[in-house]
Structures are given as structure tokens and as C-alpha cells.
Image 1: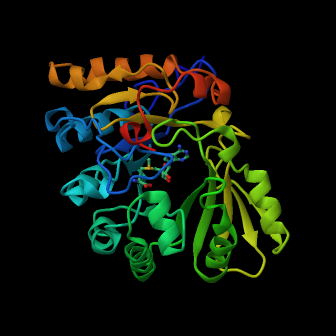
Image 2 (image 1 turned 90 degrees about the vertical axis):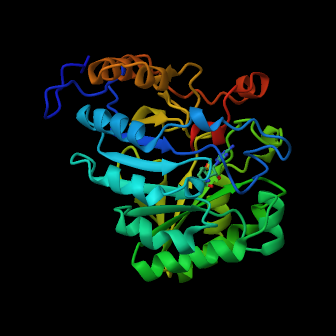
Length: 341
Ligand code: SAM
């Protein structure tokens, strides 16, 4: 329908059959992680991608340039844990140097942030999302199956020192595991320039097989907060932003709700995903993916790659695909840490 919309260099933009235009790339740079969050990863033996399958910086930059020529303006580095990718600031500099890329962001668990934040900011990373599920050391260790809360907090302080604020903090709630932390996180947002976002746990089936009763609906979290604080609606940062944001009357920071399960926001999706092993996915829950690594490594031209990207996006489903029963029955073959959250 909108396939004729052109970018500056004459290529069509990436548009699906529902008219959604792709502007944002979630770029996974590794499948490795230094946490084993219960809802995300298993504790035991993990079938990591072999090293030769992981895209090189040059391959990633090439795909990013082609995507930029197709209208993508924002890149978010993710993983796995992106800070485990060696020389990440070198890649960040390559990506922030692409003219059409206006926004380079990072999602991290924050364990290595204290030492990495400075080099990343220098390399052009402007926005940081830090994942943190508990403000209590034992609770942090329990949900992540590893320690390290003090390192994450040091990373947050470093971001503040660097002026990389407001920092977004992503909290995934699991009933009976960390839902006792809601008020503590609100207290944090009262005191610090953070946007604390409560995220509904999605049934991605990577870690513990949590049942639907472990989901804490965003509406319930909001009611709990409103029982003690006044929340003023701010709305979404932009129409495609996943978080619905509220200002805390007396606070420095904000509260956001990301409710992919109870209030899916697929209608405004502008994202595409590139996995660390070079597969393009038009949705977190896509059942098919395009093997870009094969094209890159077997001599595909930029035009071939652009066509493959356009075909992948054209095949994007309507979304609203979070049918919990369906997902509990039929677990996805590729898990969150192998896609890039
Ligand atoms: N390692 C980085 C991190 O921890 O943020 C980036 C990758 S991680 C997969 C990205 C985000 O996905 C984190 O905020 C994590 O909590 C979230 N996540 C992982 N599994 C999830 C699930 N089943 N439901 C909702 N969010 C999930």
C-alpha cells in the first residue's frame, strides 16, 4: 500500500501490508549473558551460537547502512547482554557514524556499565535502558540467579555522572518472585531521574515455565501505586514507544507501564530485529525469519539484501499475537536471549 514511499536515495521505505513503517532496529550483538533471569533463560547447559555464526562488526554495519537507506533512523543495541560483546564501543562508533541514524540506544543489565558507560557515550550512544528486577540483593540474586546488584547501581550512578539521563529502568514483574519490589522502585523514581518501567512478563518460554497466574497485569501495578501516589498521565514518548508514562507528583523521575500481554501495542510497531547470528525477524513472536547471514556471506548485493528486508517486512503479521494459551502450548523455538529483547 505504501511501498512507493521513497527514502532520500530513492529506495522504498520498509512498510508492511497494514501500513506500518519500520523506523527502528533492535540489534542483538551477542546471545551470551552474565545473568540467568528466571523468566528468560534456563540455568543449565545453554546451546550458545558458535563464534563463526556471529555477525562481524563489518557485516552488522553493512546491514545497518542498508536499513538506514530504507528509512530506519534508530538503532537499539541489545542481546543477550550487549556489554559482553568485545569492543562494543567500536561498533557503536561505526553505527552512530551512519548519517541517517539519528538515535543510538542500548539495553543492558548494567553489570558492566560502570566501566563501559563512558566509552559508549563517547562513541555516540545517547540513551540507556537498564534492566533491574529487584532493589534488594537477595531478591536480585534470586530472580537473576546471579549476584551483582551493587554493580548495577554503580552503573546507574555513572550514567547520571555522565549526564546520560533520564535513564530508563526496565522491571519485569513475576508474581510471588519480585512483585514485592513495586513500592521500592516507585521510591527510587521519586528520588532519582529515572523512568521506571514495569514490564509484563511475556510467555517467551526461555526460562522457568511460568504459568499465566505469574503475570502481574500493568493495570494492577498502577492501582497499587495510585493507592499511595498521584500519577499524572504523560502518554507515550512517541506513538510507537511501548511505555505509557506517568509523572509522579512529588518525584524527580517517572513511572511507565509496558503491557504487551494485556494491552498489546502491535498496531503502532515500527521495529525490526536482527539477531546476533544474522537472522531478520519482523516481530519478537515471528515464526519465520530471513537468513541475512547467508546472503551476506554468499555474495549478495546491497540490492539483494534490501529486497530480502522488504519481503520480510511485507510478510509481517497484524500482531496482537500474544495469545497466551497458544504460546504456552506452542513454545517458540528461538528464545528471548537468542532474539534480542
Ligand atoms: N541483557 C540485556 C538486558 O538485560 O536488558 C538485554 C537483553 S534482555 C533479553 C532485554 C529485556 O528483555 C530485559 O529487560 C529483560 O528483562 C526482558 N525480558 C526477557 N525475557 C522477558 C520476558 N519473558 N518477558 C518480558 N520481558 C523479558
